[in-house]
Image (cartoon, rainbow, N blue to C red; front, side, top):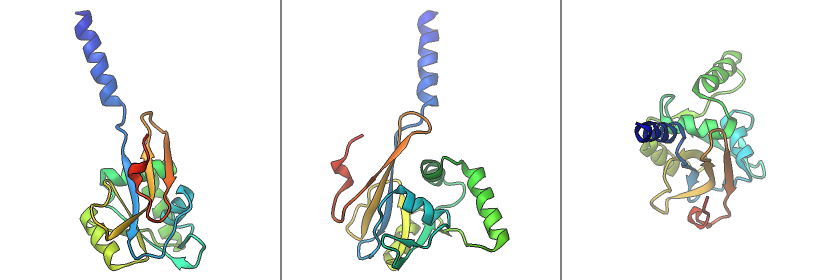
Length: 165
């Protein structure tokens, strides 16, 4: 009986802990955009800036659908906010007419297609890009413990696989 209880508790803890996941902030390989930190990406995706890097290049953020799990993880890592808070934030900004939210795409393949056609667009993916048409601007990692995360800015040509958690 004790073993069964221990097994159930252990399984419950494993289910309750979020899995570690990498989120790749990406742009087209020929994009002139550069990112210094996760704060730069946060400012872009929250409508606080329209530029990245030295401020000379306008950037278009590209988002996934509201109900997409990766979108939830992305905003939780960047802001600590859940989907309801992000949606409320954008509803207020839209109502005020101050700024438009990131351009929504239907799926990760749609994000990839859009990025390849628009060099100043920035999006995010749940997997490392599998070809040389995209470059990784920033690697966001969620921690093993809820609410912890960190980001790794990448230099041009640097591959995220060089880092380990």
